[in-house]
Length: 133
Length: 393
Image (cartoon, rainbow over all chains, first blue to last red; front, side, top):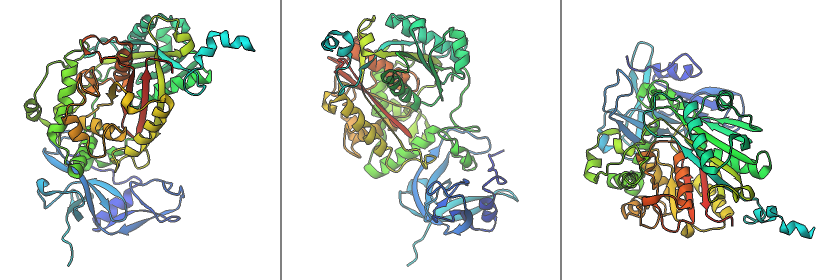
């Protein structure tokens, strides 16, 4: 069995939004900074008020690595992990789709791909984004 | 008060602009490897006995104690039969070796203790510690969020940083391999090292990937073992068994906000800050340093450290190590014990022990000539920088 995310905790709105093909992260009602995973207080201004806001499902690739050692049953190696910074500033680890690992490069524009894993769980993955003319 | 000048105490106040000098006066360690018959407490106590013997001090003379990676300070004091005036406990992360040493110096200068024992015990190998997978607690434990994508382990965290360094600066696998190879060559001269057989760059490339771009030989060695250091005031140090090794400079800085992700600058900003503070305190320049002890949990950390602590320019660490500057006999012999990569992963402790022995001139075959200053540095979300010197000022 592959590792599954906890979709019922403080990040529940994030996981529910992925089912709707949306990327939703926490936004501070005071300073407007986005954050994920969820925290009660904003790490930038320490305010408590926040809302879950849909953000652009686009970002850039910051770096990547390829796992050859298996740490989890159910995840076949090799597989690639990418680090993405969404345009709203939030960082995520994820996996690339529709791209060969040896063509990845830092700063590559990426966009969300919503991958249904179970009837309840959708993962947020990324593919290269074609720049619009 | 003219008689004050004749008291030994007055000489202890030389050095850093009136700051009292502090010295390491005892070091000790266990065997490193697989030691299933000892738990972390016992490994720590074994090392402490060695360190006290080395210093010529008795258990009763230790009035400060900080334990690291040992699960409980009270239990440790029970089995060691000690009642220190000051006691503390620190988590089992490698960044805490430097923190403990800097704290001990501050305790002594601040008068909370006169003689501090730092005791580290690690039974990670026999205890089956795993760095990655379910229950990964690296850093803040924030990594547990990402296991659905297969992201886990400190090794992968550093692989992500290494890849970024390669892409930004053209750093190569050969250059990472050179770090591992150089430290293994040093380990061949260290009877305490766990891995002592030299290898070639071809062997390095042939070793399997764990998390690409990092090979097996880019990773430190998880083992059982213990290390202890004894620190006291410079004044007291002069009467003890070993030549004092003075803690001439300490610096510390952090990059903890957003630290579930690798830092954009490879921790350069906190390293620059910590380096500046420590060099200022020591009143020396990098050119005065004889040997480097670089926290080498993974080979790329060595590259980041050389840049952040100012031994080479930003992005130039790859060519710098490929030119051979870290080897014994070269300009900055580094990790002369073999370090975490080849001696054993004692989380910074054994590197500090090696720094002390180099400054004492007690390293035998691997001794750095005329070793006046050794610089220990650790690049991590908590950066520490410690400069050891042969002279009090």
